[in-house]
Structures are given as structure tokens and as C-alpha cells.
Length: 111
Length: 111
Image 1 (cartoon, rainbow over the protein chains, first blue to last red):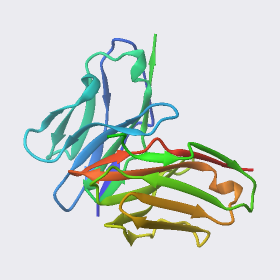
Image 2: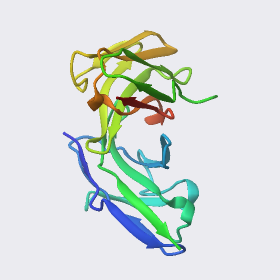
Image 3: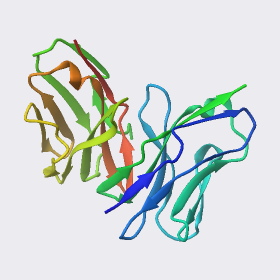
Image 4: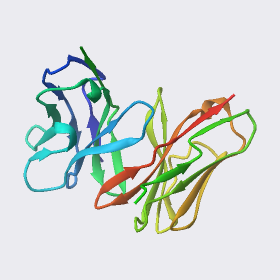
């Protein structure tokens, strides 16, 4: 069975500050991990994904995540956030035809 | 490619009416998913198809919900009769290379 835990439901942060959104997973099979972003009133958009290879994954909009097998984590980071990063972020795990969603983290960037 | 297309984008209907949501996946993607998103439950997988065949419909909440995929380029999700608790955003997604591409969603309001 696969599961994902997003530890923070809301993360407030000031503009230009760094941010980390936490995600822990459990899986008994090969791990695929994803971060998606959902802007207000829009669908989900892929930020980045880990399928294999380098554990540091770079995505769009300056985000990156590191796959840490020993800690079963896939935390999302950005060194300097912008107001436009305000959105909900979902961590997902699973293979292509069956994904497990985290409950989402609402990132609110303030001036 | 225009991405995953959903229609209508917004639907307001009265309790008891039939509602049909439509989805056109990205050409060449052989998996199609229907999700529902609400504040209370977050994102829920309702059903998914592989090569137009329903594979797992365990997420369909009750018999009032049905989904079809008559061909590789079209799928429908029908609710009959609709109820106020069906109000949600319904997303369709298709897959390529372990990445799910989401449509913009249909916001359904049942009065």
C-alpha cells in the first residue's frame, strides 16, 4: 500500500523568504513521487517528478525537491518565494495508473 | 496540443436533474481518470479507464454516478439524479510517461 503525508496544511511565508513544504511517503513498491501545484480556480499542474536517477529534482518556477530514501521524504523547496507562488501544493506517490494524493499544503505568500 | 479539455467549465443545476460532464484526453494517452475535489474530502479518484475500458470504479460514490468512454478521445461522467452534496470540482486527467495531465475542471453546483 502507498500513502503520502503532508505535514503542514498551511504555510505562511513572506515574499523573498525561503520555503520548504514537507512530504513523507510510504510505499512497498518502487517509488515514483510528484509535486503538483493548484492555483486558485485552476486545475493541477506538474511542478516536478522523481522516477529514478538523481535524488535532487528541479522543477518549474524555481522549485526543487530531494528524494530521501532513508527518511522516506520528498520535501519541496524554493530559496525565494514570490507572491505568485500562493497556491495549494500536492505531493503524490504511485505508479502511472494509480496515484495517491496528499491532503495538500496551502502556501500563502505575504508582502 | 490543447491539453485535456473539459466541458462545461461551470454547471449550475437543480437537485434531481441529470448532469453530464465531458472530457477529451490528450491524443495518444491511453489512461483517463475522473477525480472529484471538495473542501471536506480533498481530491478523490472516482474511476479510471485504460484503453477505453473501466479498470477501477471503486471510488464512484453511489449508483447515481456513471462514467463511459466510448472511444479514445471522449469520456463522460453522469450524475442522475443530482444532489446538493455532489457540488464539487470534477477533474479529468490523462497519462503519459507516469505524469498525469489534468484538465481545468468542471465546477458543479447543485442547488
